[in-house]
Image 1 (cartoon, rainbow, N blue to C red):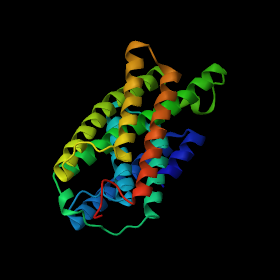
Image 2 (tube, rainbow, N blue to C red):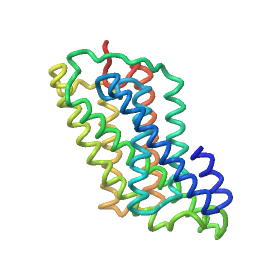
Image 3 (cartoon, rainbow, N blue to C red):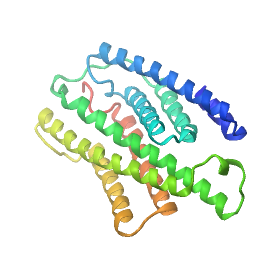
Length: 258
């Protein structure tokens, strides 16, 4: 419903639509919160060890961070990009097996919630950076063609979009770094090895290098605007693609009972 009303806002640009969309999205978020708490209690562990649970948690954290960004920066139109993404994650999760699979005893550790929550928070910030990059490219296109119409009137300025994109990267990158470190510690605790070059670890490292290169380029080579938006978008698509593909192949996230 939030996605539908946000879409209506994009076409009509009437403020009443975005106010309703925000209310629906927050109501959905609160309901989503209740389901995650219930799943957590029922499973007796962090609900992120299957692809169904991981996509559900990813959707929830992305919306949570968007609400925080909304409170801090008042960028309501960002919700029109976040809500379809959250909806897509939820719809995909709904098509996957929902049974609760117990963790192997060796994997049960307090490092699990620490690692998982940090990783998904980092990914959610990268998702927001991706959406802000899309908004930047759309707005720049309007300005280059001197077509002051449509979304031009509701999208933020290029400077604001670039600044928020950078802030999301600044938050996401250290979270990803700490998630990789805590994942290595968890691995050592569980199987006696910090790093064994599994596909999940390799692609996490590739993603880390991509975002490190992007931040380095912004700091030293002056990467801004469209170039940074495209690089950020490419890195996120690689992150998302590798996450989904690896979890489909492995049958779950972060090791199940097998």
